[in-house]
Amino acid sequence: MTKFERRGEHLAGPNEIAISSRMNGLRAGVLGANDGIVSMAALLVGVAAAAPTEGALLVAGIAGISAGALSMGIGEYVSVSSQRDAERAQIEREKSWQDSRPEWELKQLVELNMKTGMSEEVARAAASEQMEHDALGIHALMHLGIDPEQFTNPWTAGTASLLAFTVGGIIPTATILLVPNTWAIAATFAAVLVALAITGLTSARVAHSSKRKALMRNLAGGSLAMLVTYGIGALLGTQVL
Image (cartoon, rainbow, N blue to C red; front, side, top):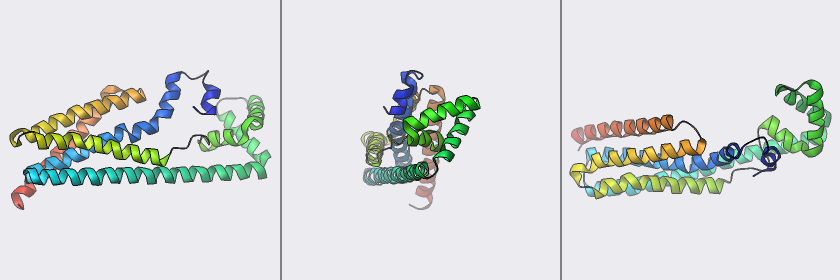
């Protein structure tokens, strides 16, 4: 918990603080697993429709999970690293402004406080107290929307995405390989819908959002992806193979 959360914890309930701190973990974890489930299910169903052999599905499964997990992990690492570098650069600029133009920074903070509904007199008194306590921290938070004590770790985010995609991708891969050919595609559809229901409900629970909306989005998106790739695979299997 950062000092800004500690400072306002008497105003915010534990769930409000928890939601903010868990958003990055939610994205890298639950949503990474969701990507693995949908991506691999769509890929394997398409391959199964075109060339329903165990060898082709095994190669597609291994290649798909490897490529997808590495892509997710590296992409998340690069994205978070770029975001962190940009935020640190903004913090450094803010720090230089604090040293070179303190009067202007005070005026800016007064205006920001007034936008929250304070009168000018109250906003000026609050800004003076805030500047005395932690000028850089309060400006970073109110002006830039950055908490200088809470930067996301790109290694953590990248690793979480890689592992989450791998775990999610194993579900449709294992299903389509282990179930007899006659029922493989239907069983994969069913397994994927169950897995997507779990990730949708989990994300809604963590974020305290609508479970119904999260569930419907996941099921509709996953179903559409599998149906489209199945149709493409069936068409290519007929026309090409």
